[in-house]
Length: 368
Ligand SMILES: [Zn+2]
Image (tube, rainbow, N blue to C red):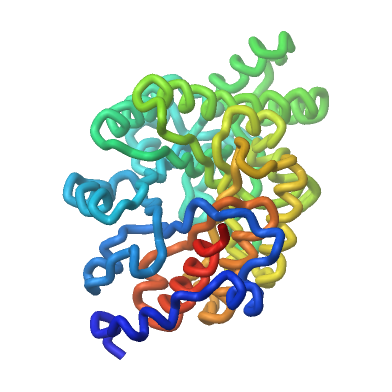
């Protein structure tokens, strides 16, 4: 069926009442109004097929900031869509090659290798920080955005693979000096490898705490810049969804994400519950979001909010339309007040996934 030829009568079939949606298990009596029915990726994937996002019950677009332009903002405005810019914070690819002083250093004193497609940068290198924050300010001045979604806001690692890559970093001179000045600990003047060993053996706990505070400080400064430049815009973060114990606590221990440090400075959390990519079941998405909302004591109508991002794309294995529907529902469950999927292309190229998303978003939109 050609998508552009869907007649009105078929579109009407997708207008479900709350009761029909409840019978189909999309919403429960407990469901609160879901305010964000989002897509991640350029809306052109649908617009090029002559599909308006309102036809799909979508009300928000999240996309990489480099994909935003005036024309897109204009059409998004005409369709009443909110636009949120994904802003990759600590991805150093394209930067560290020409600024080796910002290259993260591992516990053996070597420059880190890329962690599959991700190349983390040293989060304490002042030149990089200024570079990134200037980009942020310019972005906020250029477009009337509804929010900034920080991405890659963690120390060098890779959690999106079935076998995560979790190195100990960063032991560069900047980091050692910043650690010393934050904690008052005097790190002995040893060779790089011995210095790293000394820190991990003698001050492991303080080292982890400090690393988390560095990440929280990036969020805090980003928040300040947003408040200065565009006070109504939200600050969201895309983040690793592991609970406190998975991989021996690696979300905090290695990535440096401490929810207790982040919850008062983050408007919206978007756990990246890519179940297929991580080799997990669709049901895990529901369990994880429930755990997360309890962990942060998420309350309806209050900040911080939870708008998970779920997997639609077929990698490493095919995600069926039915499975995609399940993870959308689970993502919008528990204490979530929004949901989005990765990616627009993965849905736009698959008519069954388009129908699934339209139906579920219609149901979620019908809960009053
Ligand atoms: Zn460093």
